[in-house]
Amino acid sequence: MENLSKHIPVLVNEVIAALQPETGKTYLDGTFGGGGHARAILDTSAPNGRVVAVDRDENVTVFAEAVAKQYGDRFEFHVLKYADCDQLEREFDGAVLDLGMSTDQLTGSWRGFSFQRNEPLDLRFETTGQTAAQFLQQSSASAIEQVFREYAQDRYAKKLAAKIVNERRVRPIRTTTDFVEYVGTNNPKVLAPLFQALRIHVNDELVNIKRGLEVVSSVLRPGSVLAVISFHSLEDKIVKEFFRGSDYELLTKKPVEPTQEEIKNNPSSRSAKLRTGRKRLTDTSIE
Image (tube, rainbow, N blue to C red):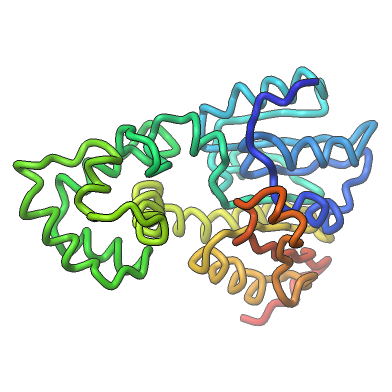
């Protein structure tokens, strides 16, 4: 059956090797996206393995419908943050979280995730809360500087924030192009971290990751494996600290990274890091 999503999931074989999906068991895909990891789990756990998938981005529903058409009642989807997956009132035999952006969001969402297209500077995964444009138009210079400094490690954060506040009344920021003009360069190495910083802020991503790891862990049965893929150091640090400070047996002392072949076939995978752990049968964590 045709896969409507253009997104290529990363580290699929490594995730499957960690989860070792079995027929008759139920798995959580907490970041459904284009459905690549969910499909792999369903294929590996045939004929009776099940996947319950969630995603905070309602736009992925079309991809979920395609998976449901192919796999029937073995698959279930909810528009929901993985940090709220306890609302499902279910227990799972394993879970995967892919914290990265999908190709579908970058190329087809019209929410400004790509600085290479002139789109509204939205950057939200959901339709609630402040957009990135509103943040830049309404916030103080110190608040804007903090976002760029903490989430982008940009050494010109103070200068850029001051420029935005001083000029935004006459040069409003509404689109990706408006923001790029403020930055003053088309260099992806400069722009990518700044767009990432705004996206992290408006979606409260780091708080969501910290809370989400705890919540996902609470719905996993003892002995289950949790696999988490991060794409930048801020995410990876949170995941690393979570596994070290929780009741998990580490399966990856060092993060698993894509092979050169995968990077060649899917360049967007190059910064991916996979960490996995097995939830202990009894809680042996130290207070």
